[in-house]
Structure formats: C-alpha cells, structure tokens
Image 1 (cartoon, rainbow, N blue to C red):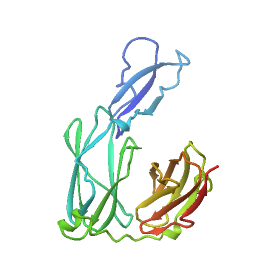
Image 2: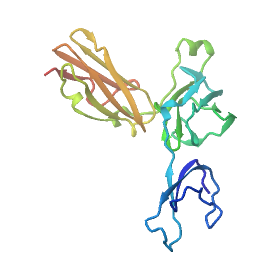
Image 3: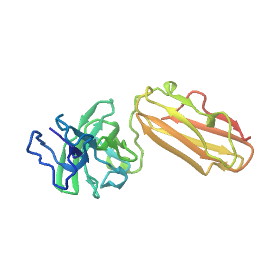
Length: 257
C-alpha cells in the first residue's frame, strides 16, 4: 500500500486511452498516472509499474504561531503548518533535551493546514524536526528552549536552562579558522554532535570592531557551517563558544592575506 502521494508511471500501449487499472494491477494509493511506450508493442511480459517520489518544494511551506524565545516548563506548544500547495505527507518529530525522538501527531484543520501540539515537560533545548515527503523544511530542526522560573524571570531572560554539554568534544575544520581572504566569503564547519545539547555562539573582532557579516547555518545533527566576510586588512580574533565554554582552539588569532 502506498502511504504517500506518488507519481506512478505505467507501461502501456501507444493509444490515447486511459490505462485500465483493474486488469492485473491493484493500487491502494493516489497519485498521477502517466503512460510510457513499451519497448515491444506486443510483448508477452507482464506490465511493469515504476514509482517515482513526488516533487517537493519545502521552501513554500509556512509555520504560524511557532514560539520565539524561552518558554516555561510544562507549557503546551501549538502551531500551524500551512502547505501552500505543496503535496505529500508531513512528518513532525520532537527531540527532547536528552536526545530522544518522538513522533508528534498532526491534526488536519483543512486540506491546506495542520495543527501540531505537544508539551514541554523538561527544562532544556528541544528540536522540532519537520519533513515533507522525507525532505526537511528550511531551518529544520526548529529550536525551542524550556526553562524553570516565573514568567517575569523568563521575560527578562534572568533564567537560562541547564544544558548538559562538553565543549571540548566539539570538532572544527575549514580554512576560515586558519587565514582570512579579504572581500571573499570565508567559511568553516563546527560539529557539536558529540558535545551534547547547547547553543553555538560565534563572534569576530577586527581592526574596526565587530565583523558585520557572520552567518551561522545549521546543517542538521548539530553540524554548523559558518561563513563571514571582512573588508579591512589586519589582525582578527574569532571566538566560538558551545554554550558558555570556548571550543578547542578558541579564540582563534587570524591575519588577512
């Protein structure tokens, strides 16, 4: 049985008639049906069925009411996924602060919208993984922080969650940590998959102060690609922290070429 919408191609003759799906082939799913010419018009071999995944453009999908900032422990989180015409099946997994994954059921509001709901029952960093037809949405996993304390403390960020992590286990690689090219994109990778849950902070200080263009992109599974661009020659200091602690080698002393 096909559990997702699929594009199904059938070997058939070259006539313009629709393929008869009741003769020898039974389908339990839905999808688009296309005919492709047989290599041998009078072949005695049984017809073959080719199944290709449906094309997915996850960048069109929108999230509404997704929480920003920190939330109190035992808060119920609810947000909306809107298809915007994207076909296929959606899958949502919640990764708790201990790294355990659980499927989150989706409630269909209408053909275009789903409601997602779950509870934050532990303090720490949660990751919400969202996929459509096994393709991750841009910026997935989405981050939610649950903290203990009063609403006033959370609003003022007086309370930070207690993360369990070890910055010494963070791995880094890339030319962007050894030298800098002027007026070009410099990049490097930071892998915190073995370092526990925490937040990556990257800052670059140069001859004229803070670097204006630093982009940190999460590539999945706590692997981050960092790109930056500088225009002024001189010495730079690059700091990278996993939570409150510097990663091995940080701060890095760099000089432009």
